[in-house]
Image (tube, rainbow, N blue to C red; front, side, top):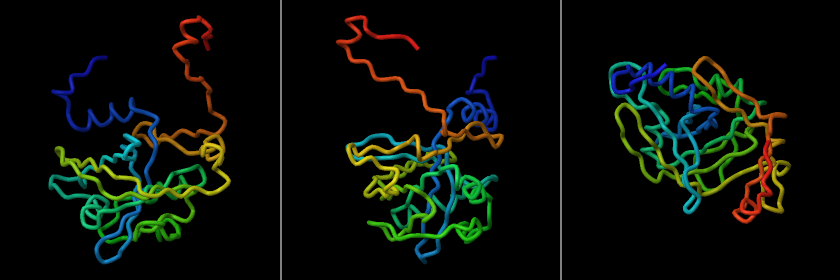
Length: 215
């Protein structure tokens, strides 16, 4: 089938893109409003974009409905200039899903999901204690595009449980961390447990020598 996205509805575009741009990492974001009230919400329109400086991007759509009302996460980040991305792994995936419920404004999703918090290194906004890794971010800029916002955050500190770090790199022991990814919009996720495929990067010299094998 062929789709002309200039003629497609927003719902059709959404369903197609999230089904094809996958699997996607999940950012379980903790943010705080100016009164110190906490919010937690997952976003899969998320990835790192560059490392010098370390910048990651998160797409945050407005609340559903006709009005252009930002979600709590976007509003909190604009007001405080900071947020924490908590890495979603198998053991907290179900509780992450509870944080995706469209609760009334002011609801503390952390309490609903049974999460606790731990102090961040560089921010006032805490990380989720049950998450095995977290990236502390300060807002670099926010781009308003249509009914969405693209939030660019500069990573200023990272927490990782010791057992998931190989200090020789330092490398993350991704095979042991067991992060989960988001697939389409039908509640589908993927595990990374026992699913790694190793494809070593090929140098130009090896390619010239014809010493590159096939899978």
